[in-house]
Length: 533
Image (tube, rainbow, N blue to C red; front, side, top):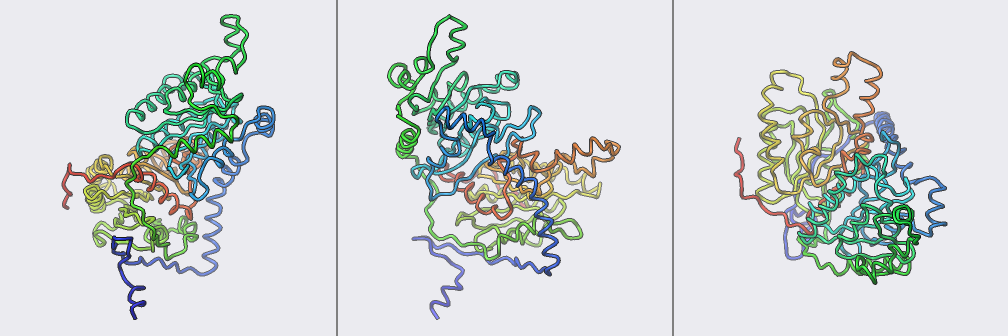
């Protein structure tokens, strides 16, 4: 009898803490086999473009570029460096993997940078690794945008930045799009240094022109002997300028910078030695941790694999079944809904992800004044209690003109609270994300700590159907619009931090929350009172 009572208890013991468990959501998905098969096919089609582009990224650069990098230059590939560096018992969260595809200046695979959140020697950090097999390691405008975003993640979350540098500097034909904004990366380094956020660098290849300032402004630098170099201009430019013949090693090799200039701290005999040294350095950071170590995590009661089907299953009004989606993401499918009978078009409530308490704000229909008021109130509650927020976007068009006019002030109020809340915000764009609803539900412009898209995400100022009339159904423009609203288009331009398959949403959220809360204390707001309705 005692065992039975424990099994059905609404309380869970976490060390010395006892935490109440919320009630389980009704997540049952009743579909006959033919309907399930139809939805599974539709879901697969919605994911095909993403899977195709991801395969292109993972296949890497041309065979000749890879051979030159690994055989002639005797260097490890960027992804291999990361694999050797990170702890194997902690999952790696890659960021903006599709960045740089189908750009106006061609494909720049992953923007020429592999970025991820991982643990090294038990220390959570953001890794920024140049891929010298992509465009010779030069920096394109999209590369700069990705580097700045990775630095922003470091600063927002107090996460150490680890740079694995192998870069030839800016791509000069596009210098007008790089030079002015490029200095921002050095500004970011200086600001993070002033805040005590470690900047660590391993020079595993060229570090030329502007790239040379990344290691020289870092806290600690490891250089690979006979491979790593740091200089503003290489031997050909030196010869052209002053007529002097000099080798790369003599100009800016590991010996010069570890023994003469002092720009580097450790000279490694090879890349494996350099990686081991980086592990030692990361083990010394001694950063404060604010996330309690909780050992018990309850998996969702309902199958996460069903999320692909739920990403395309809409009712007669065009709605996704949001509660069934939430039931497959949160711990134990448990959810405490806030104001369940008021403003039903936005679902608000408390849940746990990886045992961390979060507030969930999710679209479940068209915006109404009541739903906006409820969401505003809930955001304030979470801000006052220091509870991170998770936004699930699927925005439907408001069809009534009078309602749309009335909504302006309520959506403006919601935007104000979403923008000014101090707790971590993480957003998942599940489906439609059109118009001001994108802002009100914490789109990119509202500075969420992380934002991910499902393959079914569609982001635009209006839906394509709504824009048809303004362009007189011009076929060329329609095709362009159809391409620009897709998740792949947006992700390639870093409108998000990556596309995740629906079944991987829970893992991405848990890793993002951990990154947001591990080294940055989530403080309770005292600046505003809860807005009563």
